[in-house]
Length: 115
Length: 112
Image (cartoon, rainbow over all chains, first blue to last red; front, top):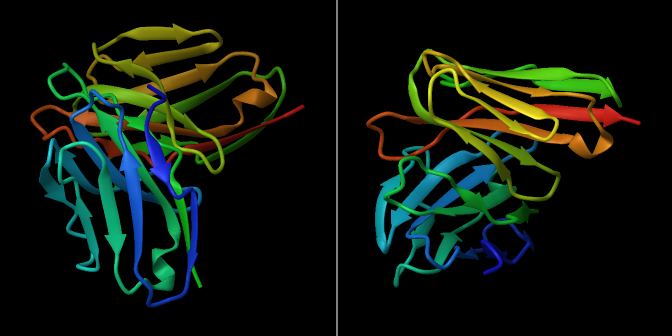
């Protein structure tokens, strides 16, 4: 297992276009998280899944954002009608539920630039 | 309201110097993680501390969890250019649904 992977690594799009990112977690991990990070800041929580269930979604998250994890393995994050303010690094992390503490392992991120 | 305060926000030092980064909160955490992130990459987990007063060492890095489990520190001895990066702390609150509370990070630059 090579850890958490994310695709694409970079995405440049024009304002108003839709984009979709994919995350493949560590295979035995049942929790999956999406974060957004801007330069010099810590990760901002977007949403998380346990297996295929989306357990929490940030109240700061616009309706233009949607995430799925249909089979409890990989996940996709879609942003509709992108805006320049959506430009950021989108990070995915996974962890294993049931442990005494939550150690999250991150992918390399997808850098989104909205022109 | 930022629940986890990290200080300093920026730090630029010379190779060989020692430094300490702080992570403070008024909340009690059941565990606290430290991560290091390099530009263009995701954060990498360094350590998890769980017990109040716990001290963990990772080569030249020493992590301490406060007795009350509200704060933590990271001390680096004889810093090297390879230590350069964004250091993030993240706490898991007792009774929370496992959503980590993140600090804003300390950006460290170690100059040769």
